[in-house]
Amino acid sequence: MAVRMVARFINLASKSPSTEVATAVEAEPLSCGNRNFDAFLAGAIDLVCLRAGIDIPAWTAKDEWRTEAFWEVGEEDDTMPGGYRIAWGMAIFRRHGVLVTANDLVVV
Image (cartoon, rainbow, N blue to C red; front, side, top):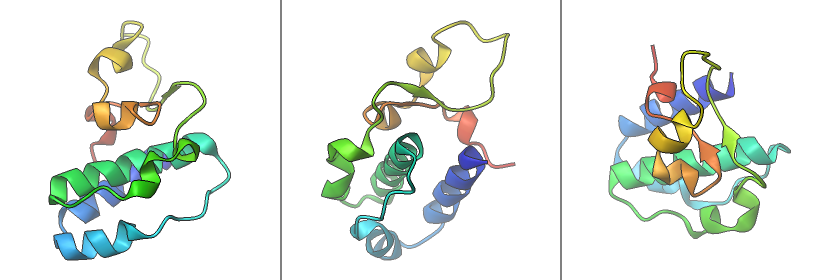
């Protein structure tokens, strides 16, 4: 569910004017209470800012917007080799401790 919500956010933000994206992500949100999901959200905000050509908000660089250990997002797949998401994961999410690939974020 969390992956779908973040993927939809990224998709909607990519269709929005950069001024609206900048306004929407400027203020630091409250924590949802799950550090992994908070880090996932921060990575998504970094990504939409990068794609919109706007500055990434400083609050996403705070330690509380990172996981305590790497967190692998997405469906488990026995056909994937170990470390797949470490190797192919998006760097903008990895900086938050979140291992997610572009394929994990496809909106169907």
